[in-house]
Image (cartoon, rainbow, N blue to C red):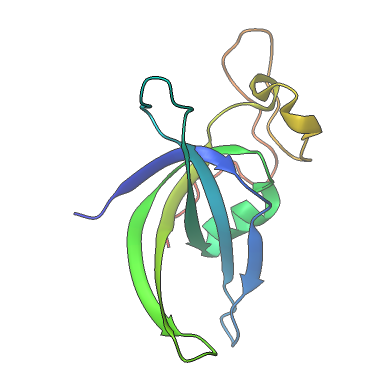
Length: 145
């Protein structure tokens, strides 16, 4: 079984590209900063920066909401690969292919977050209701690719 679940913040806005051809498809690449759960006594907490890629509707979701600092929880699988760079050296890659992604916090619970305030991020619906208003266009479940 190859299954990954991560929670972390985007290190920068998701990079979106579209494939060529008749069936152009969105491809999102991003890095997720994930804090390690445990730390050695006397040491600072450590963070892993994990490269991720998403396709189709999931990539389009990230195009709209994938801004630096946004906290997401995602589910996917690890995929390895390799290619030969322009210098003729073989480069090995490891990415998490995202199959499902959702917000891990509401905008109000993220604090100031460095002044980060993306347009279209869900707002809390009322005092202590525990529910968020869903922005137009994402009221359906995002399908797997």
